[in-house]
Amino acid sequence: MRSSITDVAGIRVGHYTNLSAATGCTALLAPNGAVGGVDVRGSAPGTRETDLLRTGNLVEKIHAIGLSGGSAFGLDTASGIVRYLEERGIGFPIGSGVVPIVPAAIIFDLGLGDEPFRPGSEEGYQACLKASDGSVEQGSVGAGTGATVGKILGRERSTKGGLGSYSLKVGNITIGALAVVNAFGDVVDPSNGKVIAGPRKEADSSVFQNTVDLLINPDSSSQAADDPTPTNTTLAVVACDAVLTKEQANKLAQVGQDGLALAVRPSHTMVDGDIVFALATGTQQGSVDMRSLCAAASVVVSKAIINGVLAATKIKGIPSVTDLALL
Image (cartoon, rainbow, N blue to C red):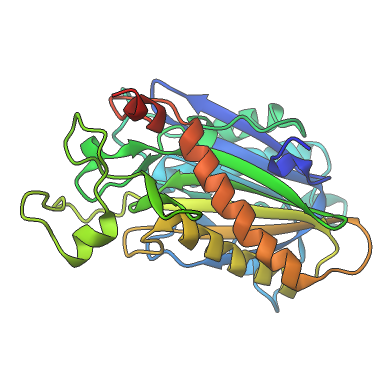
């Protein structure tokens, strides 16, 4: 196993990265279709086609998920993913043609790069061209290129976020996650409660402040930034090769949020658009223990979040965890 979401049979991942503009997008493809689910808990989400993933709606299988920077402008990357899939005859059948079903979500990374560039349809298409079932490139790539963490004291005192992935086995079932970490809060190691990325006490400091503490007991010497703009969001996709119903896929997305809350504190805030998607490719036949699968979902999401931050690199003056360790 590569310990990434592409260990799940039927999943392919590709990135488009623009380091100068500090943004990008990621296409997660399921060419054979996958039963989908979603759970939206952040109060500032930016999404496309999430309602159709809810139980009771007609479409059961989706064919890709688009994740992008660029705020609401970045939702246009899904159009490029749709075009890529339609050209290959992949989608929901309608008479003589197909309609690819591509839910999508975005993070806010505007203003960080050197140019006013936003990922669009062409960049979504390019991400698809690069998609593979090999190891997922992590860190400051794709939708995680311009991601930052811990912005209560302003983005200039934040730490670099990024894109991460992780997978494990639950019996015969493979389950994995991919996460884009652009959180308002801190990234925390659930095993010891230690903050590994967050707001820095000073612009040139490697000492982290605790966002929850600052919110509950503000320190007069470390005032929160005045701008309440919703410039944050953690996005995650949980995928498994089990045969699941739409209801079960939605449950998997729901418990995936537990992993998000374990690793990002606080999570689901008024200025975050936190979303977890779930996919079940159904390539592994047999019965499923949903208790075990749900427990694993929270683990792979939290691990993917941590991996994304640890793999990130400095960009536009925002230091990575690795940079701070050298101070």
